[in-house]
Length: 373
Image (cartoon, rainbow, N blue to C red):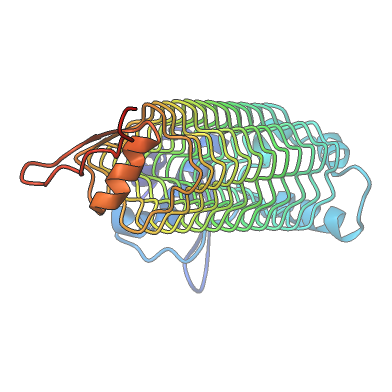
């Protein structure tokens, strides 16, 4: 058994200290790294298969857990100071601990290992969490307002309903994190990795998401109004019904992205790439799409009133019932588009657009020119 546990945990120092009667309860001693590995295997459901034993739970040292519980119950001012005085290493010993509701406002946990730790409903406002490992941690409903989480590892973390307003998450790893219904207003997410993260119904008003990676990210129903997404990779993401009014998306890549029903009114998409994107029913009023790439996109029922499409490429796009009233179309290329009537094509040419036909299409009638006197 010991040899098997050592192999599974990767901890050669692991030993069995005691075996209690009844349901088999092993008390083992080992490193924090070994505990972390066993806990991860338990959470993923793999440990029972690896050991060929039905494992019901994995818990830390009861003495430590009891001390944390007593301190939290007394609402001590400085939990970390009490734990340090008791001889615990805060940078390692909090891994996997239940700190639900802990009051840690302003705490300095820089570069600590907090993976698998539960901070549900905890107060971590103004805390220093730069470079921390919070992978698989539970931060749901936590207060992280003004917290420094730059370069933190939050992969697979639960941040649903958390308050991250004005938080610094620059360069953070948030892959596969749950940020649904989270408040990220005016937060800094520049160059963060949000691949496969869930930000549905989140609030990102005026957030800085410059050059971030949002590949396959779920942003359905999110509020990104006036956010800065310049240069961001948002390919294959879901932005259905998202509010992006006034947002900066210049140079951003939204290829194969679902923007159905999204609000992009007065957004700035200069030179943005929206190849094969779905903009069905989207609002693009007064949107700046100068030099944007919309090849193979679907703009069925899109409202493009007063939008700027100067020199944009709309080759092979679907434009059924799209509204271009008062739009700026000089130099916009409508080559091989679908869903345009002959009258609409003629009108586009009159606005300075370049219209070319699909093979077999009949060309629009020539423009009417008044007879010369």
